[in-house]
Image 1 (spheres, rainbow, N blue to C red):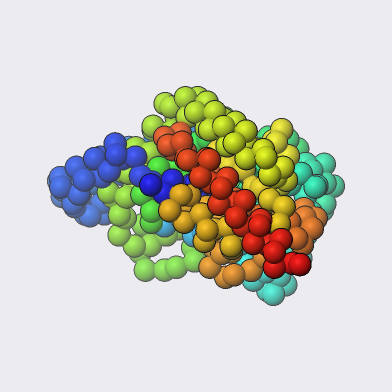
Image 2: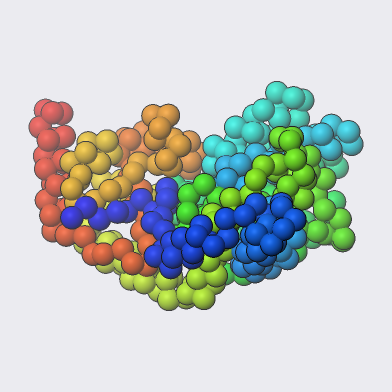
Length: 383
C-alpha cells in the first residue's frame, strides 16, 4: 500500500465533508442568487458555511468571499489593490522571497505596472524576521503580504508580531493562510490582518473552493476592485454562480478543523516523531527550524540521494514530493530552499513529507531499504 505523504499539496476529503456535500447536492440545488424557496435555501446553506469559515479566523460571515482556492484569493488580494495603489500613489509592497508562486507572480505583475516590491529573505531556518518586515515599511507602503506557514518547509512565520506592529499603521496586511488555516489556532484572529487567503483542500475539504477573508478595520473594508466582471455575486468581488455544495463542504471542513484541532495536532506530532526516528540512520538534514515547524510537515535531504530518483524508487511505498505542487509542474528548483541558502547538492536532494492526523504508519523498514539502494546507486555512479 502506498502511504500518501503529500498533504501540503492536497488533503483527502473527510468522509463527513463528502456526506454533507452530497446531501447539499441532493436537496439544495437551487441558485443562491434566485428569489424563490430553492434559492433561499441555497443561500442559507452558503451563509452558514461563511459563518463556519469565518469562525476559524475570528471573522464575520459577510467578510468571507468564496473563491476557487487560495491561488485565486491571493490574486484578488494583491491585484485587486492595484487601482487603489495607483490612485493614491502608494505603490510599495513588502513581502518575502519564500512566498507561494501565487503571491510572487502577481507581485511581479504589479512590479511591471510601476509598483516597487521589496522581497525580504528568510534566515537559514526558513523564517522571516518581523523586525525586517517593519523596517522595510515606508510612507508609501500599501501592503505587507506574508504567509503564515511555508508550503515547502512547514515553517510558521511571525504573523502575530507583524500584525501587532501594523495595528496602528495605515498599511494593509495580507496573509496567505493556505497551509495554516484551521491548524495554527487563533493567530489569524488578529484584527490587524486585513486579508486572509484559504483553500478547502488543505483542511480535508473539497478541491475547487476557497475563500478570501476581507476584514473591516476601523469600519473600513480593504479597497479591493474585482478582477472579473459579469455579476454582483460575492459582495461584488467575484462574479459567477456560487457552487453551494463546495462552499458547504468547505464550511464543514472548517467546523471539524476547529473542533478537532488539538487532537489532530497531537497525532501529527506523533507521526513526525516516528518518521524522524525511523530515518535517523541516514543522518538527514532538516530544512526549516524545528522550533517553528508545523506538526504536519518536514523537508529533508539525505546524503547522496537525488529527490527525483527517490520519489520514483519509493513509488508503491510513499507518495512524497520535492517541493510545492506548482513548482514540481514547472520542474524548477525550490526558490524557498534557495532563499534559505541551502547548498545545491542538498537542494537537489530535498524531499517534502507532509501528512495528516489519520495517515497510516508506513513500512519504514522498506522505505529505509529503498533509500539505501538510492545511496548505493549514487555512490557507484560517482566512482
